[in-house]
Image (cartoon, rainbow, N blue to C red; front, side, top):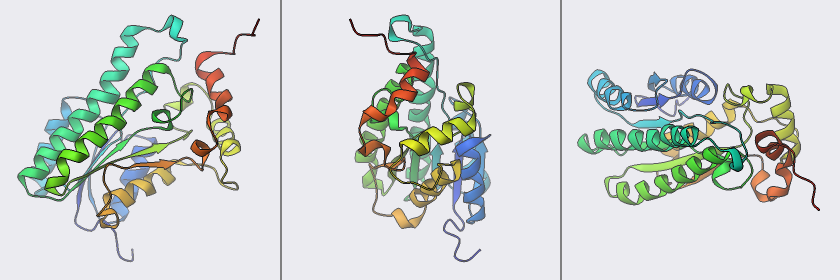
Length: 248
């Protein structure tokens, strides 16, 4: 490959068994990175970071991608056990990834990059289940907060907010073709369908030296859906919450 963008860098990618994580792991490796893939969400993060540092001598990139969608229910029937679990996986899991990656980077004086998968649900209401939406709002706040502290060490903290990517998580609700068609119809950018590889390319940018002066940023990968307003999200509202009740 001509000028691999991650030559010699060590990267950990969580949630790498399929979908966005898998696509990113492949792209990072193609660009010269030593990739440690882990389908993890909680305390195993610390162990994985320690192993990567011991094996490769350091850590340059942490991509916290592991997450769950949670149950799709009306807020009137919301299961609080599921709510707590979704918040723990998506919120607490991300906090642990940032914490342990940052500790390794600070200890080795590495000007590293921490990347997290957020969602358009962190910006627009009605684009995901309630617990999922709450967790992604929390994640976005955490990324911005962490970036303000870690900047003094030269560590960048950013997130990526995709919309409607067909993955194993969305497959529980709708087939890949329907998800891609619907997202494409809502986007203002026509003639293309959003794929996991497009999110991986955004992660490559944030992990590489091309983004040396970018931190605290939410990189939206949605084909422009977010600038059209929330009225276009009726399909997803019905998918997650059921049909709207008729007005009296």
